Length: 139
Image (tube, rainbow, N blue to C red; front, side, top):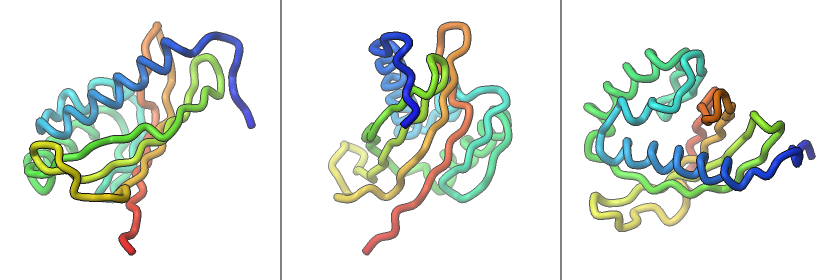
């Protein structure tokens, strides 16, 4: 397994946890600008609708459409499944997403979606360089 141990990643982990918490808050408050705040300008993201989005601007447009449309009355809770630092400035992270009610009560017992993030650190902060959402089939 490739894992960087050249630096202490404790602060990096906290920063990545905060980044994902911000995405959850943005989703739950329909705030498209907040949702893409940590998306790199040249990121490539696969979204929940199966679209491949190139860049922050395209991601913002799709987020605005989704959060004002089919996602408007949807709420989510994210669970961080793991972070692996491939280099001091590159990490992969997995999260699970579960649907919840507006007041946070669980709807899904099992994750409805699992996402893989590729994160890069530049100028002391972490950016989402790539993301891919994978729906989890209901059984």
